[in-house]
Amino acid sequence: MNFSSKKLTINAVSAVVQVVFTALLYFFLYKYLLKSIGIEQLGVWSLILSFSSIANLANLGLTSGLVKFVAEYLTENDNTKLGKLIFTSTLSMVVLFVVLSLIILFGAQFFLEYIIDENFLDTALEILPYSLASLCINAVGGVFTSVLEGHQKNYIRNFIYIISGIIMFAATALLTPVYHLKGVAIAQLLQSVFIFVTALVFTIRINPDNKIRYWKWSSQSFKELFNYGYKFQMVSVAQLLCEPTTKVLLSKFGGLAFVGHYEMASKAVNQFRALLVNANQIVIPVIVENAKIKTEGESQKFYQMMNRVLAIFTLPLSSLLILGIPFISIFWVGSFNIEFAVSMLILSMSSVINILCSPAYFSCLAEGRLTILVFVHSIMAILNLILGYLLGLFFEGYGVAFAWGISVSIASVILIYSYGKKIRLNYFNIFSINYRLQFLLFLLISLICVAVFLSVYIPKNEISAIILVLIILLYIPLLLKNEIIKRLMKKLDFSTKTIIKRKR
Image 1 (cartoon, rainbow, N blue to C red):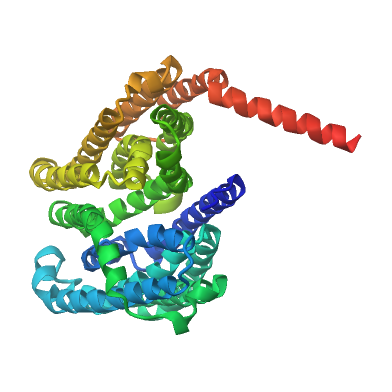
Image 2 (cartoon, rainbow, N blue to C red; image 1 turned 30 degrees about the vertical axis):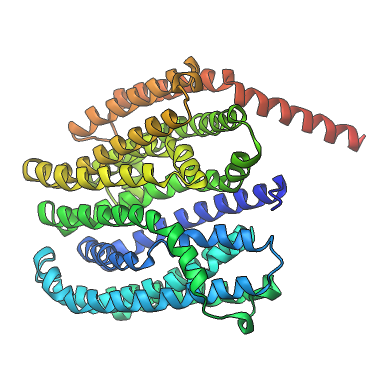
């Protein structure tokens, strides 16, 4: 395969654009929903989304191998393999998801009555079928978006997601005044249908070998997908158990309003995280190629560069995100809400460590070191369940949110350490004193925000504001002295001079 820098750049830029657009979309969508249906019904929607997501267990890790096998088949002369792979994956997804969704649908009334207020139980049961239908259609659509990725057409997938977001927002605005929460569920279903149809059309158009006449069942393709994906499915199982567990515990100890505020905080932080992680994710094919043709020392250097580039952007931007929590709450929620603010602070702090572990995570995926990921995600799921229940007993919803932050942080540190040990790399050699000082500044900002929030933050607290602004200004000299920033500035200066010369 040809992993040109041009393709990587286009895919990376489109990923960033898609994440930024989605973040803005969620900002206006949740602000609208907060006013139109209220925080408790928003909490119901969040719970149903996490509950129905359990149907993702039917994935069996099949789609995780699609990108890899599509890329491999493109280099072979057998034109029928792609059609067999697509049909086998599609049929498997349809059968598995429909069966598990029906099981969840019939068992929902028994489980939901224990975790949702009886006043909202009928509403939850009403929107569950729409949520499960959306999930099934998304699963099949995921086959075609994965095929697009295998063809290195990530920008098409990102474009589809952007348009689908616009459709969902417009449908929500039209349907919610009439159908209330059910209208939101219908809008989500329309979004899923659009992604499925559009991705299918592009999949067929980008390669003649993908046309429907080549679609046939292949036991060999199923075995290849299953053998590659079953370990990754164990990772998915652990991930899926985390979100429903957290939201069920939040509902039990904090109430539906807390679930709604946590959902909004989680969306904000996840979009911020995706902004940094998604652009980093496109290097997976490069890591695969490096593992085959590069020496161990060269691969280590590439891994070090991934970490340094990620850190130089993550720490200052995360600090700004934490400083902006009160203002995000005021503009998005409508006032300073302590449940939203504390949830977002905990999630922001833990996400920094989680973001910094993404080079290790993607390297494990590319190199097939899935055992490490299974272990790490299992630890995270177990810790989240135990700590969430124990801390929830003493600190209610805040304890549950804190338990999730602890679980993510510990699991991320274990992954970073485990991968570093596998490749015989000392992390102190990766991060110079410049990075360590940035990390200390981030911790200082976080601790001050914790102290301020604990004393019930008031935006007029001028002393705290001045201290935080002064600390964030300390990032500037550290950034200017960073070797990566210096290289970027030199390249920018060179490019500017070249453009001026050409104009002359």
